[in-house]
Image 1 (cartoon, rainbow, N blue to C red):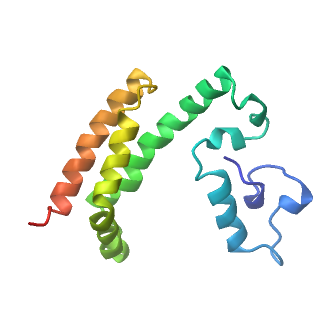
Image 2 (cartoon, rainbow, N blue to C red):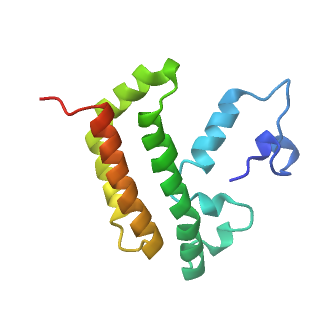
Length: 142
């Protein structure tokens, strides 16, 4: 998803970054509203008109599948295996507290019957890697 606020897309005048008036809050709100949503594909310019169509559903799923894989691979597994030293305690605390919910969500994504065969296979492998990374770095408490 391009954000005109960051200058990655030519938006309207009010959507551009202005050093004197723009804020980090605007960036974070844009990320939350446009990217951290179930179907970010439809927030790309011009794609909103195919929302709810078979073509749109297919293209959105194709857009989301590699993003889901990368999220598990880089935002979860890699953070457990090689956390930034300054954030290690916070990262491990997050995964310790949210372990069951995270695993349930990743397993649900992996078992979605609408997944492409390649995505289903990749996600199954990533579930195993995530479980291994959790067990290696955050052994279950007795």
